Length: 393
Image (cartoon, rainbow, N blue to C red; front, top):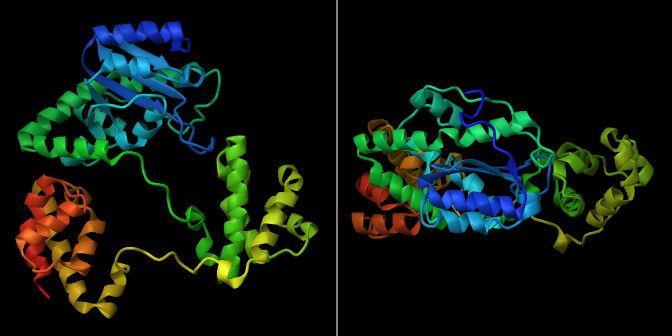
């Protein structure tokens, strides 16, 4: 597919145009295909820079949320109708920021997983089930660019062109496999999950952090990360474009004692970082001056079991239980043609096998699964085999 079958619609960027399209959406019928484009890797946040919609009887709408801000008129027009999205959890948070929150969804990526498709990317699923090849090449573009190039808009329009057709094809497969209710529960769980919780100690995700040897270096990295994050937020630029992770780790390892010494490091020789040398050196100095009590621990205390590769030494019985559970779940995954991570969360399996509930019977195992977020179809499918695994040792 090289072009939308109805032609490329104009971008909706005024309240009047938005109101007109909302009226057209309201008059349409059936599910509404929805997609959003962000500027990941270019901008600081994950806001939507383009929202695409399509509904039978309405056609495709390309909505620019930047000048409009609030798209609740679209939300009102859709009402309680089902939204069709691919990998919904990626787009729902940025859509909620502009006033769009679905009552029901059909996630074609998640449906493809449950249906046992070998590849679940949008292009692969469309080609497999509908026989179309989608245009590729702009998914990682800087969608904050204005004006948006026409070829990008064509790409964006095609993303929703056949999404409802894809939904119908996947729904038929799921019905044939007896997995319709599984999918319904999974889609409801995506909606109930809401936006992801803020990550604890996000600075620990810096690439190369494991090369730092002591808490003092970790304190310096944390200080430098915070300075970079503050600057990136103010400028609305992705942090990695302000200062690469590798540059931060190198600066901490070099431990420069003067601004001039910092400027000798490769990444800091550029014009932009020469202007910011006071910011970066000041952050390193603050980290270096922290008291021992203020320094971060080597690792953040976890709230779960230790890594599974340590179980055999720390608790051989737990290692036996986990091995039995993994073997049984792998067989179940193969039987139902569902990826094992979709049969049940691997983290939940580890927690359950590390500290099984007492008494170890189907009732307590089922209760622990529900408390851990498992859906009812997962509980029914895995309760007995996990009970067997939990009583192995």
